[in-house]
Length: 269
Image (cartoon, rainbow, N blue to C red; front, side):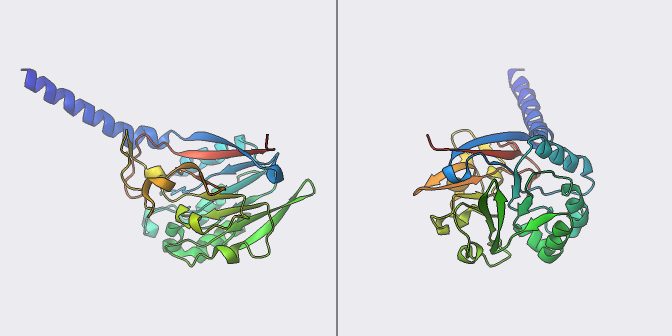
């Protein structure tokens, strides 16, 4: 009798955990806040939202993301790509619909992005064209400047490591500090020059499944958990890696909820 009870309880626990991982945590989109001290970027508020992986018929999820981003009242909205989902066009909402939905994102000085590996597999030229048509500036191995309160801020982006040819030096060519660099994968970080004030990356999804003590089981990064998520400081350089919004490979999350990132810059104390 005792053995049967243990088996029944185990089944209920497994079913409950599976339900949570599949249907609860992936929908628990949160806002993660960071404050970074940087005199040249002080007063700036950035929203960083990446790895959307919008599936077919997920219009409501896309609207939810846009609404949450707009609530932050950002100066600039940035992304590191993977707007589409999966490896085939059947597994994703069309790029045109995704771009149209994200075209409703509001910010004072624009929405800038680079592209991810899923965008490359879908057709990077098509994704870029649709995004640009909806007011989202795509930066791949180049940069642009924004004038804010008499300051010039440079936003740079590199191509995806899996589907493109990333060149960080080409990306920041003629740009002057302050520079915010967008890269889909955090594995570019060791190559980022010191003149870049902040690097923003995605791709890892934080591992999607993070076990106590062990951490993530898989991050799609050669550096495994080192660059999986959060604020990383290395040799005086800073990078924020987001856990992303959607899921990839397996449609589940555990101890690694989806997020949009809000970054506020302030003067050094």
